[in-house]
Image 1 (cartoon, rainbow, N blue to C red):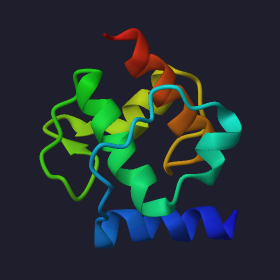
Image 2 (cartoon, one colour):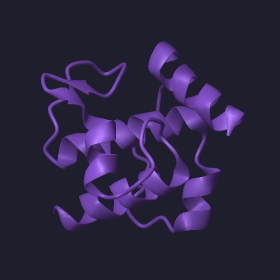
Image 3 (spheres, rainbow, N blue to C red):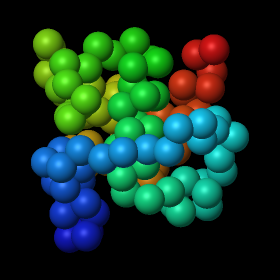
Length: 99
């Protein structure tokens, strides 16, 4: 759990890059687990945007009304406060449905 919290904090503080042209739409749970931490942050931000959240900055999940990630987690009955594998997996699945 400490590692997960530390990873989430580093996502918010440092910001990360993602490879262009990578297709994450067909990932299964095991593949989501293998995504690097930098890619996880960018992928989550991309999915949240696709789901209609208007992120204020590319460096965090803040919106005018609060935190997009926490809002998504609460609406989907997930543990909230940090980007974890379950959240990332569900973000991918929900954003695929949003085509």
